[in-house]
Structure formats: C-alpha cells, structure tokens
Length: 437
Image (cartoon, rainbow, N blue to C red; front, top):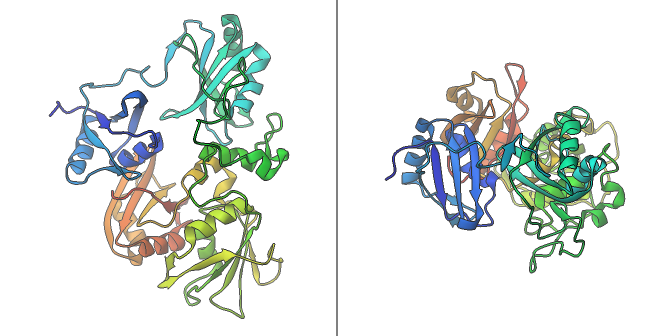
C-alpha cells in the first residue's frame, strides 16, 4: 500500500461518472481542495484538506465498496503528496497567450457558450469556446484569433460581473496552444467550423430547450437567462430516463395523503425539491387529496416522475397530473409564488441536477458553524432510526448527511424539518444520492 497522502487515487471512473458524483463520494469525510479528472485513463485524483481526512475516507471504503451509478470504483493513496496548482486548471498565470482560462465565481445563471461569446467577442475575434465544471467551479477556455485580443479582454474583464452581483470573472492565460472542439452546442463551439455535429453520434439531444419553451426562454443580451438554459446546463441535452420535457401541465393532484399529519407547508417542502411552487390547495371534501401548482410543466413532470409511489406518513402517495390547468386563488389556498423558500429562484441548474426519488440519506445545509452531530441527531431523530450522521465542511460552510433506516423516515424528516430555523439560519434539506455515509 502506498504511503498515506492527502491525495486519493480513484480508478475505474467511467465516462458516465461526473465530478459531482466523486465529490459526493468523499465530501462527507472533510473538505476537498482539488479534483482532477483523468478521462483518458478512467481515473481521478482527489486532494483532501489533510492526510487525516484522506485516511478516514480510505479506512471507511476498506469495508464498504464504493459504487457510483452502478459502477464499482477503486480507491487508494496516490503517489502524489500534493497536487500541483495547475494540474486542474491548465493555467499558466501571467505569460500572455491567445487562450484564456476563465473561472466564474458566484454562478447564479448558466454560463453557456452564447453568453460567454457575447461577453468576450467585443474585445476581438473569438475562434473557440469550451466550458466545463471543475472543483473550482464553472470554467471556460476562450481562444482568440490573436494574443493581443486575449490581453485586451483580460485587462478589460478581469474581476467584472456578467450579471449584477454574480457570475464574477477570474481570468488568467492558459498554457494550451490550441483548443480541440468536437461538437458545436451550448458547452463547446468552434466558430471557425460551423459544420461540427451538435452531439456525439448515437447520443442525440433529447432536449431542445428553445423549442420546448420558445425562443423567448433563451438569454436576451446579458439581462436574463430563462428556465430553458438552466435545464440545458443541468442535463446537457440528455434528460433523466422517463422525463420527456414535453409536458405543459403545471398542476398536480396528490392523493392517499395522511390527512391527520399533512399540511400545505409539508407538501411545499417535498414538492419544492423539483421546482418552484405557486400555490397549494388541500381539498376539504376529500381530506386525503391536494392540488399542487408548480412553476412550469417541466418542474411538474419531474415531481410526478420522482414522487409517484413515494411513502409518507405510512401512506403510499399517488401523484398524477391534474385536469385543472391552475389552482384558483381563494381563502382555501396557500400562496407560495413569492416565497423566498422556493429553491429554483437561485442556482436552478444545480437544483435540477440533484433531482431524484426519495432516498434514505438526507443532506442538510445552511447550518451554523458550531453545529455538532448531536445537534443534527436531536433535530431529526423523532422521524426514524438514524444509522449514521456526519457533519462536514464544504467551501467553508458546515453541512451534514443523515442516513435513516428507510426512505420513508428520511422523507418524513425532510418534510417536517426543511426550513427549520437554527441560530437564525434557515436549514435547507434535500435528498442525497449517496448510498451510504
């Protein structure tokens, strides 16, 4: 076995495995400072904050086979004691080059090729753009026709925001000599070769966001990004199995509820995982029925797909599209359209990406810095048997994972304790796709 190191070597990392999948595998053990994907070798390197956290992770996975998306991955200490600063971002620092490496901080709207081209093209002829996700965040490589154009763009745009208060540009020169672009789509573009295919052969796009929501849903200038761009950014044109992206019905009928334990806020906590909530109505003449109006048809389709048959309060939910297009506002409806608890007003692409059916592991965020595992257990222990609980730090913020005995227990904890206030902070709870913690 290699000498202990804070760098973990992961093997058998298939093309279907994302950086986020790997982050979820290790983030419960401590802070991850760097992640490098070695796609050509089906491998990855993950640097933890210190050796102790890496040792803890590997000791855990000695007894539990790590598995991502049905594929076993294999972990060991790397021969590297530390990853070089440039290993993951292909930057060269201050030596001028016609290719810029751009890191976008505080991303609240998707950074598509079209958006970046509008930002960078006023400073010179842009030949190619490639966007990608790294542990450092959203990044892009911008290739200009000339080095002088790249220098001009860097001087003009460094530290600027694409939108007011968010999407800040951090720019350095890349060490690459030429960008390789294989496809022309929202994630990569060769402006010198418009004949490149949109997707890899044999994997056609299942989502034409422009057609689904109309051309008005596309970004107009730099003032607004529509829902379609967030969906495209989240799924890259390949929607989750079973999701068509064609539904236009926004209202959902939920039945077989437990009328003694359900209320509008609990339904909001559950359905808001899949989209923004406009209003909710409990049917007084049918106490085990409710109507939930989502922000749009795509969000409604996600909710119906992932919640159909879910267990809550000892009942198996029946979740279907309603014959009603909307819920009429009245004394018996609860309004949520302007609620700041709606999750998809910010970071919509990330929230879409995390949509899944209820699991037995919940993820808690927006926690006080002094929170302990005992505090987390005290918060949710009324809802079931807790098999494991782990508090960890990610990007300087405390988060937690709690593993229950069943999915129903985890669902109950989520609907009852999401949006709970602790030390003035509103706790956010969602389902985690981790199998174990």
